[in-house]
Structure formats: structure tokens, C-alpha cells
Length: 392
Length: 123
Image (cartoon, rainbow over all chains, first blue to last red; front, side, top):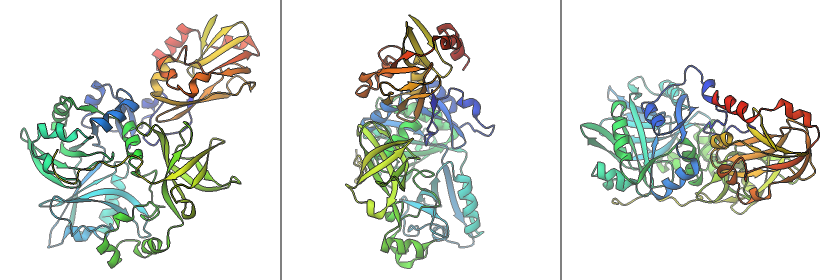
């Protein structure tokens, strides 16, 4: 038996996988905690990370019904400040298509780091805080992002990679119950807002956000306090630890793209079906990288775009499979796919020509010499349950 | 009846000319939740080491190789609706396929249970 498909999150069937680690594979602050909790560790984004604890299916379903605790400390937490009267928010607009200057304190938005052709270098969350701008970027791309930002931001802007900070995500319909018991006040946050809190003398930066489609929070805190805080969360009956495997199936069901798979420098925001990330003011000013190309695509339609697929039968169709026409010619590609525990069938994301992107379109998918069928579906596959009015 | 294992984590029970093939308890524990099994068609000729079946967990697809050469008698029909039988009972009810052995001397190259356990213990 051998693994034939390398899954996005790096699950290794091979028990030797840890021996294949490059010497650079790093340990995150909660490494020992994951191992104690029964986490199966795999190398991902340059770190040892837990792919699962009790099992992906059970963890996925637990998060949809209760609350799941994810360690996402591999992600890059960047803090931007400036001197000499430079406006950091305005400076950042040179590299993103989002409205950053218009963000109020404690407000955040999803945005994209774009190259000059409008290709996506990363997707990210950007938040205005009282004294700085806080950004969370993908773990696998954080150093490339910093290099790009250093090249494209004025010298007066300082970028601080907070590699001494851990990042936890608590996701699920009962996340607010568990977290507000420990940290009263978080229930007043609404989706895509954030604020500063303090737990037993430890500063916490908490946002009501996440990447599962569920209500939930992301909590930035010092590495040395992360284990005590994670333990306090797990002591709440609603909370179980969730690994990378379920993180991937949860975000797939939520229709959320994964950078490096569903998005890359060859895809634009319009191709990626992320037109909402182009803020109105920025579209009207056409002053973001690749604006001419991206706005023309927005007007005329892209050559291909990201769609969701309901896959017929039970066999997953995964990244690397192709979309083929009746004659077998390749017309598109599958960029993510797998079995969706809450939907109960395989799902996928694919790039297809715009003519094939309408929901309801039947598609043929080729994988390892076998033809599968599927139907283009609107996303999300599972409705988002974000909380837009404060409270429990 | 004798049971043999491969270093690729397949097992085969041999009763006369007939072999029953599956994946080991260790393999299923490594794969995690199994959501689909593609078993070989009746009558298919397999050489030892051929890709005979595909097992899909939530996260990955894995090939299952035939431990010996032979002709497929049947795939396990229960796996179509209950692929998780491989999780709950990998070395009995979760069998993948039965075949008629072409050359029983190939069994000499396989591991017995004790040798397989020793092999897994070193992983």
C-alpha cells in the first residue's frame, strides 16, 4: 500500500514521514502539548503540526456542533508601524486591493497581496488597531510576503514579524460560550471585529473571525502563555483540539480557498471568485497592483474561474485531477477536493472556463485514469454562521 | 489457513488455492477515516505487486498492491456502502478482494505475523 496523492495539508500515510523532515522543520510553542494530547504530527509549512487527534471525521463534526481549538501559530503575524508622518494604512494600499485607510479601529477585512499583474501572492486578514496595523498571513508564504512588503513599502514603515506570539483559533457554534466564560466581554465582538483583552495578566488580541465558516474567534497571545490558555479552553466542556485535517475539510465545505492550492500567483481575485476583496473605493480609483487587468476581467469575465463541485458517488476527487470535455481534452483543473463530513459526499474546488462555471453545469473529472462526474455548485456548501450582531 | 503480510501493509489469508486480501490494522490506523474503497473487478489478472485497489481516507488516496499473482474472484461487496468496515475490522470483515493464486511459491517471500509485527514495531 502506498500513498498516491499528496494531500494539501501533508497527511502522511507513511509512518516514516517524520524522518523525512528537513532539518529546518521547526517546533511551534504548543508542540509538546499537541503530542501529549495524542496529536499525530506531520511536517507542514515548515513546522511540526498536528494533522489529527481522535480522527478527522469526528473532529470535523465536533467543530460544526460544539467548539474546536486549532493551533495556527505557524501563520505569520505581522505588525506595521510608521514614522515621519507616514500613514501605514495608506502605505499598505500600495500592495492590496482593499480599503485599509477606511478601516475603523478594531475592524478587519480579508484582503490579498497582489503582484503587478494582479496575481495573488497571498491571502490575509488586516486589522486596524489603536497604534498599528495587524496582519495575519499564511505560514508557508510569510517570509516571501515580508520580502515583497519590504520591497514595496516606504522605508518609514516598520514590519515586525511577531514570531514570539502564538495564534489559536476557537471555532464552532459554542465557541462564544466557552471563550466568554474565560474572557468575559468577547461576546460583544461581532464578525470581523477585534479587540484587546487580558487573561490572568496575559494580553490577548482577540478577533471574531476564522476559516471554518462557523462563528468563532482567533486569539493572539505570547508563546509562553499559550499552553496555559489552551488548557483553560480545553477544560471547557464544549472544546476539543482539532487538527489540520479537519481544518482543511471545514474550510472546503465553507467554500474558502486555500492559498497555494486554490489560489496562487497565476490566479487573480476575479478568477478566484474573490471580487468582494476589491473595495469599492479602490476599484473606482483603480490604484492597486494589476488594477487594469483585474478590472477588465471584472467587467468582461475571466477566462476561467474558481467554482465549487458536488462530486457524484463516494470517491473523492482531489487536487491534481482535471476537468475534461466529452473528447477527454483538459479544460480545467481541480485545486482542492475531499470527502466532506458534514455534507456526506465528496466536494471539490476547480478552475473551469467561465462558460462552464454556472451552478448546475455537469462536469467530467479525470483522476488516475478514471472519469468521475460532478455538478457546479454555489458555495459555501454549508451555510456560514458568522455572528454579525454581538452576543451569545 | 495461513496469514501472511507485506511490507506495504497488506495481509493475505490463504486457504488452498484461494487468497483473501486486505490491509493491516496498523495501516487502517495510519490512514484514519476511510470513505471509499475501489476494489478490483472479478476476473482481473493481477501480477504480484500490481496496484489492485485504491483506499481513500478523508485526507489521501492510497494504492493497495496485490501480495501475490492471481485472478480476482470477487471484491468485497460490503465496502461499497460501508467503507468504514476497514476502520472497524481491517483484518476480517474489511477484506478487499479474493483471488485464485497463480503461484503459491510467491508466499515464501511474504512476512508471517510475527515478522510483520516486528517490522511495524521498528517504524
